[in-house]
Length: 202
Image 1 (tube, rainbow, N blue to C red):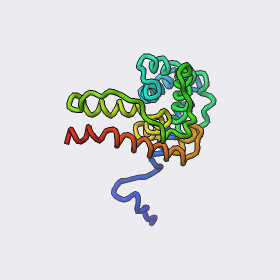
Image 2 (cartoon, rainbow, N blue to C red; image 1 turned 90 degrees about the vertical axis):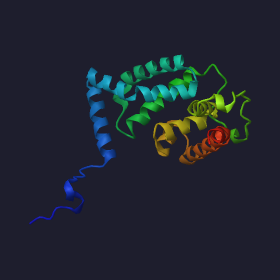
Image 3 (cartoon, rainbow, N blue to C red; image 1 turned 30 degrees about the horizontal axis):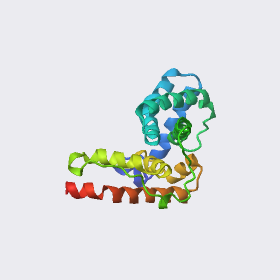
Image 4 (cartoon, rainbow, N blue to C red; image 1 turned 180 degrees about the vertical axis):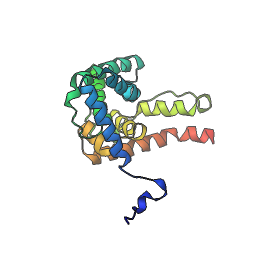
């Protein structure tokens, strides 16, 4: 008599991991979109539009411009969907396109991804309303927006959007160590800048 695996006792049948299931589902959705299935493409839009918009918003700080970037991203995705071969997550691929489109939209402003000494840079002076007059979440959102660009992108992609450091490294074309150090830098800045708000709310 064949013994059932211990992992399947109690009714649990771990056929594949959650990550494998996600990848399989993504692959099927993209396959349908590549075949011209409009419903599949609309589903892609519904599932990922909010994330794409917020990534652009964190870079640009302008909702109207971010909405334009959102539309541009999915035009690019529609045209290039056949180039996605399942290497890495679909989300990471979409966010890579999102960041490039957002940076292109921002190109008229002084900007560079190569912040060699950004840790030593002095944050711009901002006149803050008294802590008691601000909602803490709004304070957090504003301080995230004030982070140096690369630190902000890493923080948003890792903490908000749940991407891994290897995925972020591929998107930003940096090594994983840089992604990790920028996340640490972002968290350190946020902790210092938000300390007074936390004291006020304590």
